[in-house]
Amino acid sequence: MSTRPQNGPLTADARPLCPSAPLYEGSQLLGIVKQGGGISLLAQPIPVTPEFVETATAHGPAEERFRFVNKCVEKGCAKWGAGGCSVVAGAIARIETAAQEAILPTCGIRPSCRWFMQEGPMACHACPQVTYFNYEQAA
Image (cartoon, rainbow, N blue to C red; front, side, top):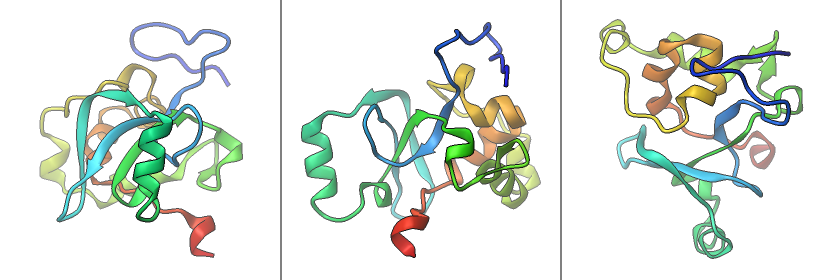
């Protein structure tokens, strides 16, 4: 599949970024889960160090408190279907119309974001409302 971000083509070895990835090798911190729900997004993702992983996972799944970004694995993800990510489609369906018209939130990954490539600006309005849920751990 050939996908192009707004500021130019992806290189042959680059893949779009998933803005709601689990914590695994290569992940970067994208945001912090707020107490009342939703995400406080960072202006730029921060590389995750082994020390961060150790500390963040000491008190349960890190995804319950943080949001991570990593390469989109497309068909390797349980939430991939019909040629796209079902997470963002569901999130867009839940946001209020007023929020859809607001200025886009600051984002350090927009040019290479899977959700933005798939859904455009609507994905950006829904993004801060999405928290990660590990379906494998829940099973």
